[in-house]
Length: 89
Image 1 (cartoon, rainbow, N blue to C red):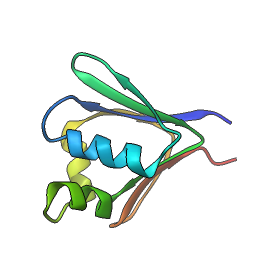
Image 2: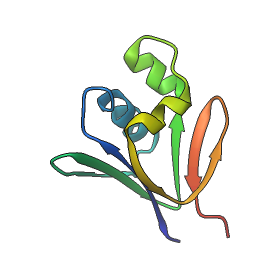
Image 3: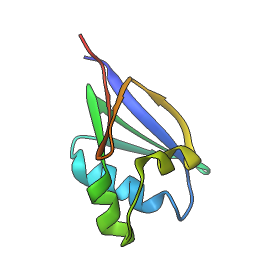
């Protein structure tokens, strides 16, 4: 199975997003660079709106991810509650 990944700019807005992704994907691997954070996992990564909202204390629209998104790899499946990257076989 191949890895999927998502990369964000490193800033105050992305910290709770990154914490949420790591909490919801315990096998994910964090790669921190000076201006970028890349999170990868084998096969699948899930970003949950509810987890982000718990950390930031307000409503969060998953479209807000795109403000600080650098790149991603994997097939994207998105709805109002979840942003999933996976490789479909």
